[in-house]
Each structure stands twice: as C-alpha cells, then as structure tokens.
Length: 250
Image 1 (tube, rainbow, N blue to C red):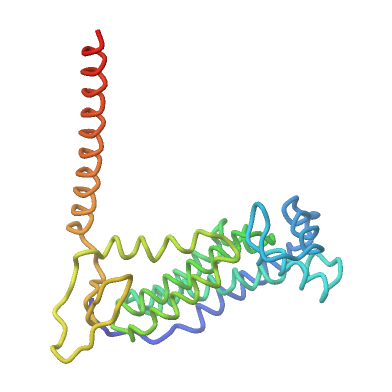
Image 2 (cartoon, rainbow, N blue to C red; image 1 turned 180 degrees about the vertical axis):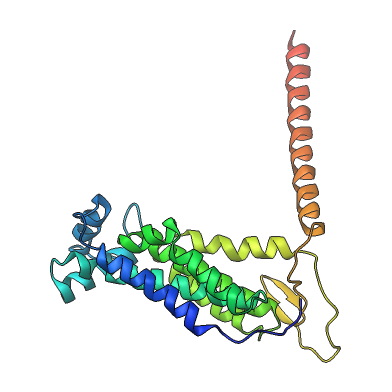
C-alpha cells in the first residue's frame, strides 16, 4: 500500500452526510420517547460520575439537551443525528485512507448514510451512539497512521478511547485488537527513524504493517493452544494426585 492519497471528495461525502441529517431530522418526532431515552432523562436529573449500569456521558448529553431545548424530541435527538453525520463523513475519509478515489469515497459515505445501524443510532439518544462514533474515529486515525502518518497520532487515539469510555467500555477493545492483528509484523524503517513506544513495545515509524496477514494470528493461536494444553496438564496432574491419595488411604 502506497502513501499516495486521492483528493478528498467533499461534494459526494457532504451530500451523503446532508442526506443523513435530513432523514434524521424529518423523522425525529415520528413517534414518542424510546424507553432508554426516558431512563436517560431521569438519570439526567441525578447527574453523577457513573451509574450502576452505564457510564455518565449519555445522561449528561440528555441533561444538556433538556437545558437547551426543553422537552423537544428533536432537540434531544439532535446530538445523535450529528454523531451519525460525523460517522458518515469519517467513513468517506477512511475510504480515502484505503486508497479510494472520488467514487469510492462517495460510495462508502452513501453506504454509511443509508445503513440501518447508523440511522438507528442517529435517531435515538443511546450509549451506542457515541460508542460507534468513537470506534469510527479510532479506525480513521489508525488508518492514517498505517498509511505513513505521524505516529504521534497514537496519542490522539488514546485520547479518543478515553473520551469514548464515558459512553461505553467497548472502545478500549479496538486498540488491543489492532495490536493483536499487527503482532509480529514490521517493515524496514530508515536507520535514522526514532522508535516510538506503542502498547508497551517499541516500534519504528512504518513498523506496523497495514496488512496484518496470518503470521501474527497463527502465533496468537499457538500461544493460546499452549496455554490450554498447560492448563489441561495441570488439571490431569491434580486429578492423579487426588486418585493416588484416595488409593493410599484405602
């Protein structure tokens, strides 16, 4: 994969984003509150740093929407709609990072715009709204880095993960999965390149291959099989000791 990037296809990407926003605003008041939204509105009256079943971000957004727009359903669902718009925009930009030209960027953004998942999370205020947005932002930043971008952007990835955690705990899994997929894959970097510590390991710029391949996965699978085998052997040894002790007592 080369470092060449096509120009950003702003017109088709923005058109897809505008279509998403239009659909979500038109349908914002087509039916009443979802039960989760009612729960978030109640939680918004008792703001805290966390709740038994969720982090604090979504109730805080509900509180801000109520303060700004009162009891308006459209006002409550405006932030989710804007989050869906951002997801559509970033999907087009991810296509660009993958080498896509004008058509690919526009088509990717359009697919996101008419995706039932994006429309659903953009229609309701829910924790999954901000969860999906965090995942897409992280995916875009990682794609930029793997295409030869400044590896200091890993700090931004960490910041996005930290911002996403108050919505849901899921965003922390994506960086770990990416590191697992890229384990053991390096490209030769210039001798003058300074190593950067990422995930407890030191990599040189360009050292994380954009195509994880199979070797890293095979190593992980072999390591897991080895751990399972060792655990099974320990269980067998314990069982043997128990049987011997029982036999000796007799």
